[in-house]
Length: 151
Image (cartoon, one colour):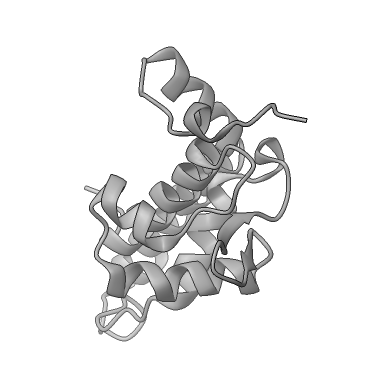
């Protein structure tokens, strides 16, 4: 079974958390840790990589944190997955191990095709779609608590 890594799921959750809970203010990593239960050691490294990739923007200062670098409808899950894949080091890659002709010529190409299909599907899912799914499913958002309409 194809399974995403913890780091990959944490990255997707973190970006979705920022999109869903921001309310116009930067989201601090400790808030994401509190809401999502993501270990901070994973989170900081991943957030910085997402900033370098242009998915997030880091905001400095006492009220700083992270916000989306673009509209949430313009960020795909596939982009986030690619960033995390670049971070991860796979100790036991299929290319390093010996394989029979069937493995090299049939199984590995089939696995590559499946990977391309999955990435194509992930590229078609935006963070906005996931936010809309969360709203529809009744997931509470802290963004409404942060809105301030005073003039």
